[in-house]
Image 1 (tube, rainbow, N blue to C red):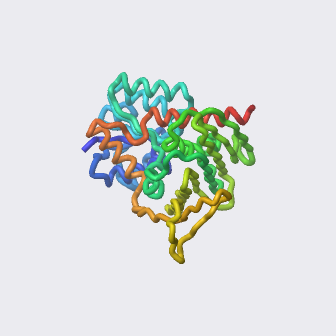
Image 2 (image 1 turned 90 degrees about the vertical axis):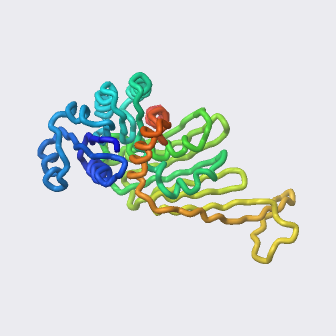
Image 3 (image 1 turned 180 degrees about the vertical axis):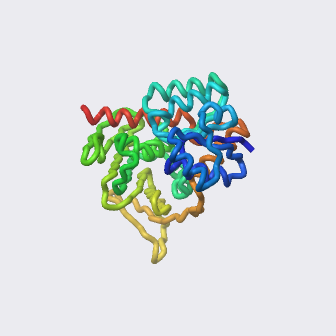
Length: 321
C-alpha cells in the first residue's frame, strides 16, 4: 500500500479523504489545511489525522494528493516533488502554463509520477464509447451548471470547460490550428458563459459551450465521424451510438435504410455499449496508484494536463481579441 497525504480539506478534499481511507491501494496518513478551525472540524467529524505543518506531512508519505485552490497547486507540487514524492493534482494542473511546464520538467528530474484530476476521463459513459470514437470530424459539447459561488474565482473555462477540452484532446490526435471564442461575465468578475470553436490541423472542429449560471445542469458531448454519431451524457451516464453501413441487397422490413442523391444506400443501426457503474474519483486515484506500482504512464499525465491548460488559456486569451 502507498502512504498518501491530502493537501486541502474543502468540499472536494473531504471526498478524496473519504475515498482514500476506503481504498485498498492506499494508507491514508493524514491531511494538511491552512485553516486550522476548519481542519479541526474535519478531525472531530471523521477522525482523520491533521498535520499542522505541510512539510511534515509530505515527509511522512509516498503520494501527495493536492486538492487545494488552483493558485497554490504549483507550490504544493513543487514541495512534494523536490522531496521525491508522487503527486496527484486536481484540475486545472496549475494557474499558469509556465508553472505546468515546470512541473512536467520536475517530474522527470526527480523521477516521480504525476496525474491530473480530469475526472471525466473516468466517467463510465465516456469509458464505454471512447474506443469507438475514431477520427471525429465535428464535436459539440454543452456543460451547463446552476450557479455555485465555489469556483467563481476563475473563468468558467478553467472551472467547467476544461473537462471537455481534456476529453476532446484525448480522442482528437491532432494539433490545434486555430481558436475563436467569446465569454460573458454575468455575476462574477470573470466570464460565466463561454463558447469556443477549436479547429484542428486534421480538419476536425470542436464547438464547446460552458455556463455556470444555467437554470439546469447539463454535461453532454456529441461526436460525429464517418458513418457514426456518438452521444455521451456525462451527467446521466448514458450513451447513444448510431452507425451506418452499406445496406444489404434485400433489407428486412424493419431495417432503416437511407439513400443519398447518388443512389448510395446505407443502413442505420444502433449499438448499446454497456455502461458499468463506478466511482470515477476513486478510479482516478486508484489507477494512479497502479501507475506508480507498475511504473506505467498515468491515465491523465502532467503533460496531458498541461496541454489541456494551454488550450484553455488560449480560449481565455481569445476573449480579449
